[in-house]
Image (cartoon, rainbow, N blue to C red; front, side, top):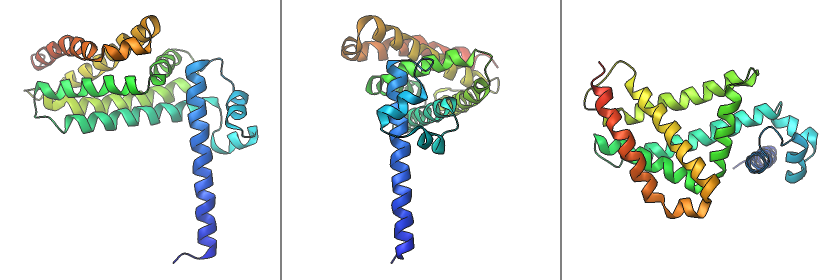
Length: 214
């Protein structure tokens, strides 16, 4: 049985977790609606109904919450991909499952499409946070490469799994981002299977190219 002090600490920790979650959710929404360059810390705290000082108890800067959101989003995407590939046999179906998981993630959470797109742009700028963002993305691509390696009939040491992971990440988000922007979310959702098949047809040949690049 917990002591009163432990119970109080537990309540405090739960309150902190709720505040942290609220700030992250509001920031993700604002970055999607207004953009990471135009949304300000004041916008986040106002919508979250928190003081600016509270924000700085959890995040050192706007760049810090961008990094936190990027890691959270990519970790969620990685977990969904891992669950999907574990349900299929080794071989080409592994890549197909990873593609389908990625498409479903972006259709279920379309705000990440624009957010990831903006972050990739920030990574190309000469700003201090670029290295932190790149490290987060690199870790995701490394893990994605490990997950799709069972799709390859030959264990290739040349880094081809990483090449395929990078191509899948770029092509999936690129195709879906443009369709959502120009055709609308509902249209993209209705054509889910079309995009899954399109990406699968485009990326499966890379498995053969990768296996032959030893």
